[in-house]
Image 1 (cartoon, one colour):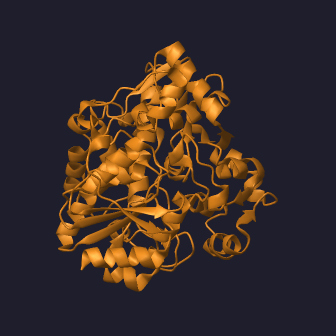
Image 2 (image 1 turned 135 degrees about the vertical axis):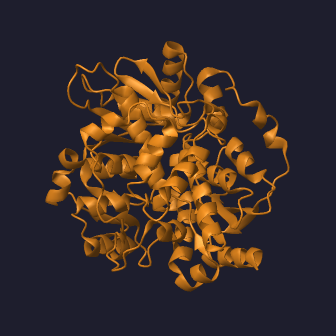
Length: 476
């Protein structure tokens, strides 16, 4: 298996090379040259596998430069009941006829990012030990990626983490999760700006090839293919649970997924699963008031917003107006035309802050070819959905999952199960839960008093050079 850049760079690389690299040299994102296909017989043969062994079966289709026994051991070490709190790892809960919630937030930081980040930590440690090298990870978070990465990498040999986040824009619980860590290999940088400023800094540093090579810079954001492919697994796991049926019922059943989406990484993993042959009817992107993705799927116009036009909402992990993973989908949408993708995401976005595919035949056929749909949710919608879910099902959901449930109900189809991907546990957004229900959400005992712990964080302006200087100082 070889990987190529969405912007047409001629190099083709193997998995372990792009694992440590992040962005391609031309600023593009890596994708496999082709998506491996999984037929109905293979899908059926995976019923009954543990989540760890299912992960091995899927990841081994993409990773041929780690010995199979080693990769299987990494998967089994990652996906355990001790780490994720349940033997199913991602159990499916039926909320009402045709509507399901897939639990992805039972990991160490109570958010779906743990599903991939725990694996990534083991992969990094394995490959760095094999090479006898070190890696400095630079990331950007709007709330959950940062804590998931830091908890996955803390204490790992050969790894330092430099995590940028928008100063003052995460929930108090999210800030405390990250900033209370005292591990010497973990560095928090609060950027005076919004998440997109953090993401731009990560990309700018990654595109400085001399600095990147000198200081061995890698990424854990979903621009790193390794993290995205790990997320593909729970789509297969959700499908396998939702389509359990008697042997007399022929053919693979189809399901739909609704995914709360800001940076397009989580739902992009669903796109990959569908391209592999998983019978997905619809992939529904649910946005909050920062609706750049919903606008594209409705109109064909991709329009990024500046900091002043990025709303601060009660589902803050989706307060994103520049969806970096969207480039992967557009690459497939446009027939894998790297030159055109480079023009759109390079010059055209830089010049106009937008591009328009509304008149392109590829966009006209996008829903039929790729199954995408979308919808938007507001603060009032979140409150109403949280109340409804609690009153009718006795299930408390976080604000982002509430966005997903609201939009999912608008896209239900008779006979097609709709699975909403849970994003986090409610305690991470306690203020809005109290506003909706008049009660505090429960929290695991290990997080009691966390907000009162000493904090280790540096505040910096949204300046690439200042961040580079901070990295160099702490790596020297």
